[in-house]
Image (cartoon, rainbow, N blue to C red):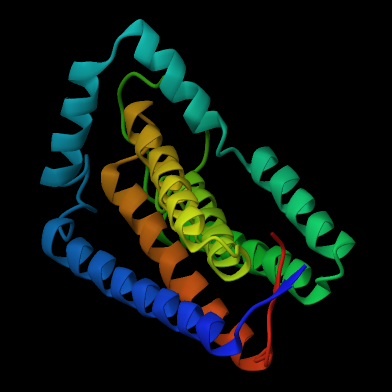
Length: 226
């Protein structure tokens, strides 16, 4: 185990929170400017551009690959991964982190489902590559995958001693979280505005949850896992 310099770790948390705050503002701004017409019947201009584009690049090999990515963001996968993360932190006696992660994912998932029933947006029509039911906005896969990605990135940045490796892993994790959302447009079950809405919700909620967590759990030093 390695004990970090308190100030360095506080700076890491501060910069990450700044980044999440900027991302939240950016996604909200993008949604208002580019996707404000999205809730008309059949989707907005940007929604249809995205649907037409992914339809034009579909092929058998790419379909198989994207379906795998899409299914990796299923609810059962999120539940299993949450249990594993919870167990990991519990085993290394980081119980606050374990409960924080599990409760945050659960609350954001509930908010996502509530929004679906409030908005009641029908899914896009067309050729779906996967079977699905329920409402379209926001994309649950996008919400869960981005929530997971942003929380894991936080733990990576604040617990890995090698900052270069931490940044590289964080970029890869964020790309993966984004690809899950994009895959939902490709397989035909979501508009791009559903996905952006999911990313926006996840980013804002994780930002708020981390603000609360760090205010409550303001430690003088942080133990590095690796």
